[in-house]
Length: 212
Image (cartoon, rainbow, N blue to C red; front, side):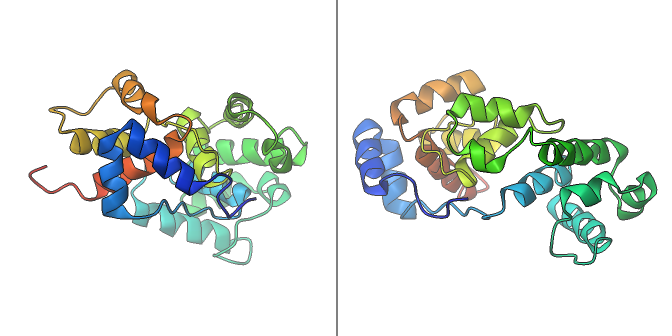
């Protein structure tokens, strides 16, 4: 999967500065857009499922224990290995029954070819979302995150992400965190670089002061 930007960052900055001075100020404050793709789309989706509804330290501990059962606590197990994993092993690693089902469904989609990471790159955004969200445990938010981080899509606005909406509240001086519908309107002028605008909302959320 790509590790370099698939579009011109300079063109994105020019558009965003012209379209929205608030984002322009964030670009000046936080510097270049720096997404961090893992280079491992399969591992990225495994992590997405494992980390759902868990605090980071607890999720990382479960991940290490679960990976270790396959020989390397740093490397995700391959799909056939997941499909042959017993319920007892999942429980022993701290993986809930529901998440075990999600992980098996992801593995099954990959083994039988229903989910092909190489083919995703050629699909339009809406078809990527469809291809990912048929996997149990992968919703639209997860698909949006994947499209930004792993596929390098330039025009994704994940309004279901609280970090983006908290950043909007801070950056635009809003009294309340915007609803997804309101956030969609705020981000509309950023198109076709809404992924970049979203990244700067995360930076704004990261720098909110206790009184902000």
